[in-house]
Length: 209
Figure (cartoon, one colour):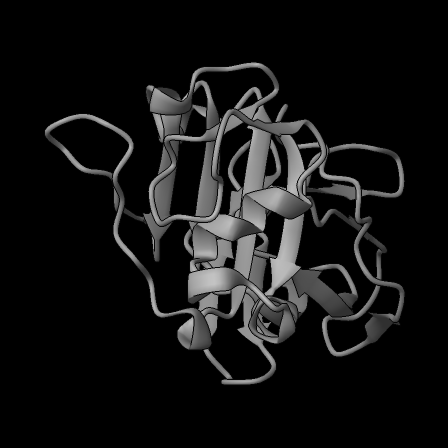
């Protein structure tokens, strides 16, 4: 999660305390805005969040009902209003679903949906069959990624991540780990222009938690 904090004139508000709380677990991450008014809260788990912005001389802002999905880099901005520190403004609307912080495009599938689908062998790799732009060169239900192509890219460049850890065969080929499907919360498939943190994976990304 990232964002920019400004005042009503558009000027940046540095040194603002940003508290990010996952509502389901009460996990709390605290950040501060830099001199450009920008903050970052990395490595958050998917789920519903509440974000609070506090700084001296301005009313506290609470943004509720923000939904973070697997692989998202979500922009959550705030416009501070001059007032007492004890006053607060509660914003009910959620963050925009269009992800503007990266150039990546793709699809998100919940673990419940994946679990209920009649997938042969129960491989998470079969999520690719629900993604626009996927083509298969042969029998595309086995655990290997060898038959899949995303956006016309070669299959050897598809990478799979489980909780942020690479799951490809490091000796080459298209073999991967076989995650337990019942334990998957969400799967994101990135099909074009993956962010820098995914390295060589020009052919697509499967990222799950």
